[in-house]
Picture 1 (cartoon, rainbow, N blue to C red):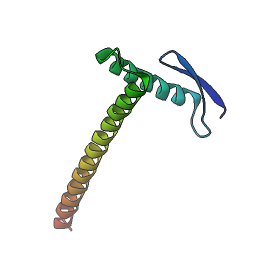
Picture 2 (picture 1 turned 45 degrees about the horizontal axis):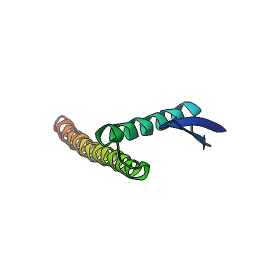
Picture 3 (picture 1 turned 30 degrees about the vertical axis):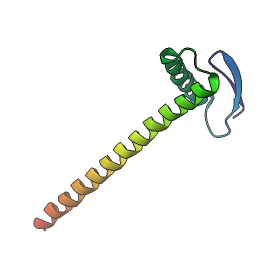
Length: 92
């Protein structure tokens, strides 16, 4: 795909994305930038390393909550499918 220039907290980074579109990589960078800015809003004097770690933890928290929700939804769908199959068998 090539290289994409992105900016995070005013710093320029060149990201190579072999399997992703430049637009997607730019969206990811914008998301990381947003999360870092949120950390700086709550703790403006924090060091960049600590801000990065806190932003990474916030992103990891979001990911794990989404995975948990996805698993719960998948289990609910499976349960509904099983019940639907049981009802269908009643009519066979």
